[in-house]
Image (cartoon, rainbow, N blue to C red):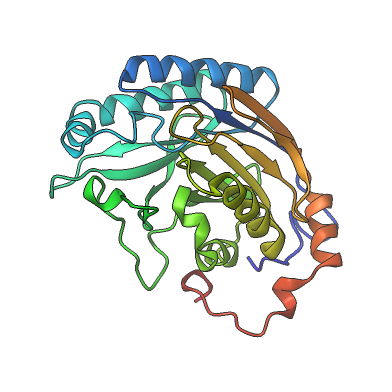
Length: 285
């Protein structure tokens, strides 16, 4: 589907999509993290949400040594994702769950799995852009996902007629990836993050998230960890950059309604996807 194609057929709008983003700190106790996820999912379901976005590394503490991350991936990955699938099914709620999965080189994948409301996995994305910046080397502890030529590595899936594209934290600094997801039909960009504290980092995250929404005229849902090492600041943005809901520094759950008429009007007022002169991307082939 073209990013500017009519949604749901000529003259018909899709139903509203209610999206929640969870903000919490994930430690090294996987069971405790799953309890938090279950609680957040229950609250999101009570609000009528169709989709819950969880922060990056919701399974296990992201700043652990590589040996601990690899062991956690080996011991807990299957159970973690199976439990999230069960939660999705019990709460009748689609969930984007970032965790870790074992690989064969000693470093785990930083993996996001999307489950539909029946608990079926509908997309998997392994983080491509690793956070080797601000004197931190994520590549020492995580194996990078493959950046291919055909976009097959991207996490795109559909809920209630809406298409969602997944991004993992540092990915947001690379606008070509967001645009490729939009070329693949994404109406909503969903970001799971554990955005690390640092000089101007909170400003960067909020600016980049809003910019990705505006430049692509899409909704954007950003769920990030809070605490000593991560900035918090989860937010839901509209396609013209307006803040629909936001969290600050504490554990929180934010929710907003994403409406087809808002998306269509934004793309009518700001037809950047039609006006651009350079349009190549893997998913547009």
